[in-house]
Image (cartoon, rainbow, N blue to C red; front, side, top):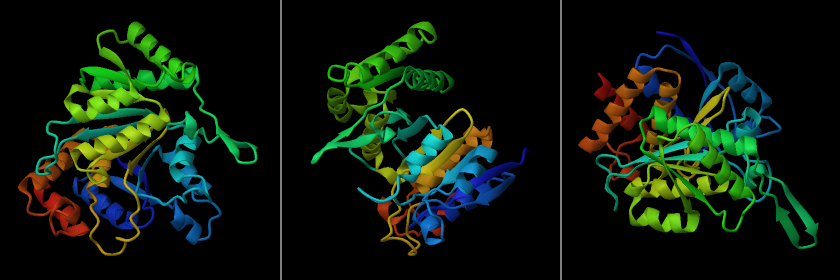
Length: 336
């Protein structure tokens, strides 16, 4: 077995607790790993750094190519730029991948949901280009480039092919934003026509798509969209299967990848040992697949599916009473 070096960013709030649990589960597979633990988020400021994303952390991810990141805190409406936005831009992590599937033992109003959101991760309104053009008047610039639109479309089609998915749906608002969203559509159409004609393809205006999604989420498969739409739709889709506590996330580029808990840092729960580590454990499974340790990834996935299906050791958000470590230990027990 190859030895891997993985950057671990515990994060803020409940981050250190869920990160420790995820690390324990990953190590229990027998993975040969060296962890490089580094800071990001409010914790970095508290420990004397002048930014929520220290350059040392960025440099380590560049060097080792892969990171597992707990939730971090970012100020709202003021203060430092988002850690997640900085990571995506500095490491060119242009593809955000969010698998969303119904989980055994977790009751929701929907069944048989199995979606993947592929989100462009570096452009759009999240480019952060904002200006005050006159007193009381501000603008925000939506950026779309042919390079950015083409590479995320190609990534989505490549992903669909590798994972044997049947269809890609592009969500857009090109009827209003004819240049930016129009370019996004044009690039997706070209990739489908020239490189992946075997993949079923459709386009849906995003407001109508939201309605169709909540009517019947099983009509969708891989959902491709630009940055802001992808952010909103990722959380909406998580709600179909039980929330952000049961959905993993990955930010992937050509030279590095960061796998993360997509939920918040929940400071009110910090230090109480009751947070659900499942989302970060699931992200760890995505990470193991990424580094070509598929059998180990499958081992964890089979184990947490069994724990959820059994329903005896669940965290409070899932209707149980188990603590963070108790839940992780239950998964480990199922792997033996």
